[in-house]
Length: 117
Image 1 (spheres, rainbow, N blue to C red):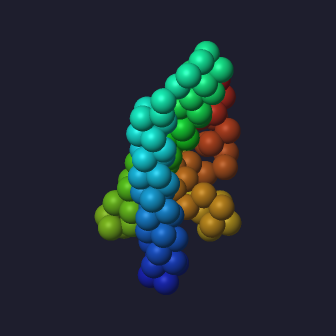
Image 2 (cartoon, rainbow, N blue to C red):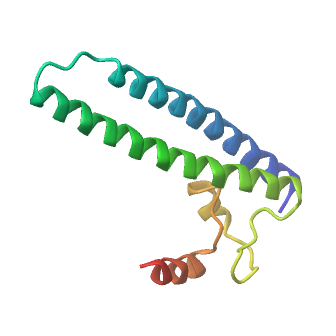
């Protein structure tokens, strides 16, 4: 992969990382606000509980993506970016533009998803 392409993906990943860190911080603040609410009845409790579950799910998904992004950034630093972790072929530029922290090429992604199902 050319240096300009690596820089493009590094910038893309860094921007997404910042966005996720901001999102996670917002989710944490929202959860703290939900904990501090004065609840008057079962409806309030149910609503807060539901909101809390949604916020936690969003936070977990964002943390997972953040770890994948950090791994991709370390691969850029180690000159291993864009190489499929399963078959060791190049991951297509088109796939990386859609999901820059992709671990697998398209074919191996399908295999990995079937194995996790």
